[in-house]
Each structure stands twice: as C-alpha cells, then as structure tokens.
Amino acid sequence: MLDGVDHILDFFLREAGDGVNGFIARGPDAAQEGFLLERDVAVLFEAIEKDFVQKALHRNGGIVSRAARELGISRVNLYELINKYEIRVQEFKALRTAGKLPMRRREAI
Image (cartoon, rainbow, N blue to C red; front, side):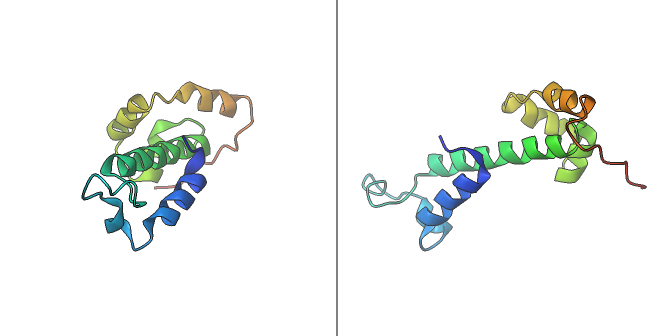
C-alpha cells in the first residue's frame, strides 16, 4: 500500500490519463489495459480520507471539535471516520500535551 496522500495522488494522476472516467473498468481486460477498477478508486479515496482526518487531528492537537470544524463536518461524522479508520486520537492529544504540536488559539466566533 502507498504511504501518504502525495504518493497516492501521484499514482492517481499518473493512471488517470484521460480523466477519472478512465478509472472505471468496463470489462475483464480493463485492468490489463492500465485502467483502475472501481474498488481501486475506493481504496484511494479511503486512503486520502484517512490522511485528511489524521492531518486535521494533528493540526488541532487531537481536539475533535476543532478538527471537525476545519474539515467542515460534524463531530459525529468525524467520530465515525475515526472509528472506521481506527485512528487513536489520544496519540495526537499526547503530542499536544508534550508540547510537540503547536497549539492554535481558539478563533473568535
């Protein structure tokens, strides 16, 4: 499996060729012709989604409500993603507590 969004996006763009429509395989030989199958696109999407969640939690020191606000989703939805990808929020909080993450000040609403 590829690590990080940068590698995944490079792979995605390299394989896209004529665009995203080329990613949907239309027959048994499509994979051999360089097309990605729909499941491959789903795997790429999940890897990118997980990376977005982890980076938002990192930037916000494990504070779920702030990460959710940054991502433009509800806390409930973010918790669903955290559970789906088995992300350990406590690790981000521990980094913040240890002073290894810059703590952003809360923005005025």
